[in-house]
Structure formats: C-alpha cells, structure tokens
Length: 114
Length: 111
Image (cartoon, rainbow over all chains, first blue to last red; front, side, top):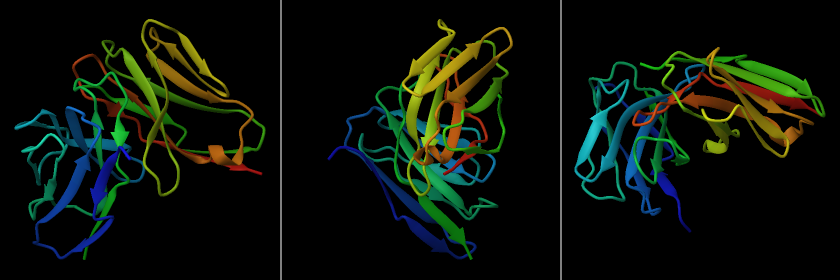
C-alpha cells in the first residue's frame, strides 16, 4: 500500500527538549517537505528536500532541523530553540521538486509542549 | 515572495446550495493554483488545480476560475453535500518555487 507515513501521531514534550518526527514514503518521490499547520494560518513550509543529501530552508525554518540520508525518509527535529513548537506538523512528498504537481501528505503529527 | 489571502475563513451553507471560496495572490509570475481539501482528522488531498494558461476548469460539482489580471482565483462547489464539509486550502506558485498556501476556509454544509 503506497503512501506517506508519519509517526508519532501525538507527541508531548517538555520545554527544553528536542523531539524528532518521522516521515517515510514508499512512493519513490524525489521531493519531500515539512509543513506546520496552525489555525487560520494555512500550511507554512519549514524545510524541503528535492534530492537525497540536500535540503533547503522554507519560510519558518528557525528552531527546526532536518536530514535526508535516504530517498524514503525525511525526519524533522523540533529543537529547544523553537519558541512556539506546539502545532500540527504535516510531511508531504511530490514526484519532483519545484512544485507544479500534486503534493501527497501524511496524516500529520500533533506536538504539544507542556 | 508570494502572499496568498483566502476568504472567507468560515462558510456555512445549506445542503444543495453553492459555495464559493476566493483567493488572491501577489506574485504575477505565479502560474499554478491547486486546491486541497482536508477533512476532519485526515490529510489534505488535492481536489482540483488550474494553470495560468486557462481561465476555468471543472470536475463534476467543483470548478475553479482564474483571473490573472486581477490576480485572484476561486473554488466553486455546486449542489453541496454533507461530505463536502472540510477545510479547503488554496495555493499558488511560480515554476521552480515552493507552494504558498492560503489560510484555509472551514466549510460546513448543514443537512
């Protein structure tokens, strides 16, 4: 069953802790993305990667880090430097980068900072 | 960079009525305009998209119109049904750039 899988679905963290959100895809897509979703603000791009071992900052990259060691995987680390990390995080992939084609999303990870 | 404004933020219609969601964009170079639907607790999914070389595209009960001069595009849903209830996002991009999303519209279809 092809698709994009995020884990965990729900995550709680204490202030000052780093957390890593997993994103795996078996669609053989080259490009992968991380978005943050807040009420009334749509989807804002955190980081994206168009090819293995390469990634670029999006509009709100501060306090986040990523890696792209494998084509299938694009984990996101929310660091303690992120001032307001409580949000819903969506991972997505597309066949190629420079989007003019469909984005396929995961089901999201909801992070709550206690 | 691109800025996309979406209105209204919430929309309530009676089943069977039409719904219209409007978006404006700032970058005249934008040439691709997708719409995504996110049902409660589910992932966003592409429902329709339009490129700048056409003014209108239709797929059954949904249609999108594009006015490049005014830099706005709209989603039209006719004969709304309860299963159309969701959050809808518009987006815009120019070739080689990343998508910029609007703030979303929560559509509620009352039976």
